[in-house]
Amino acid sequence: GENVEQHPSTLSVQEGDSAVIKCTYSDSASNYFPWYKQELGKGPQLIIDIRSNVGEKKDQRIAVTLNKTAKHFSLHITETQPEDSAVYFCAASRGRNQFYFGTGTSLTVIP
Amino acid sequence: KAGVTQTPRYLIKTRGQQVTLSCSPISGHRSVSWYQQTPGQGLQFLFEYFSETQRNKGNFPGRFSGRQFSNSRSEMNVSTLELGDSALYLCASSLLGQTLETQYFGPGTRLLVL
Image (cartoon, rainbow over all chains, first blue to last red; front, side, top):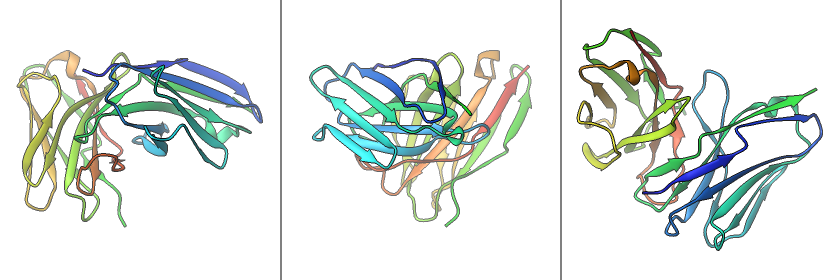
């Protein structure tokens, strides 16, 4: 089955700096890659996603890049704010509504 | 529109007991997926239901089962609980459960097995 690895497991940045989280996947048939943000006591919330026919997608301060050849994708958060502090999960899916998640990155933005 | 709701939010059980968790999807959503979240393993897919039928299943033992009702509400059951079943159980709903469709997660049920 699919195996998704996520790094780093923890990340601390100063407010206003950028944060980058990287994921690799093993199944070349995976074609959908969502990113989720999970705040304490809440379920994961989709923040951005990318399809395999797209190399990059941006939504305000958040961007995701995908390298299908290398089988890795990354989340970029610019101008970080304290409210960006949360656990972020990447995921990969080849369809059939079945997702494989990374182990999460705990991001702390220091004011 | 109300989000995905899960009940109960917290549960304490002892080894050997069984437990039933409930999930109400977003109105109109017909696909419900269940995940187990633990610090060591992250989010792991349990199963997905669509139109009262289990459509996909992850690599969990038969002690984990579920069902879906005609109103798309879903229940998950774990029998003969083990200490390792302590986790946050999340359900997620989507409209039709099709490829590339967004999943919306509930807040989860935190299960502690003593």
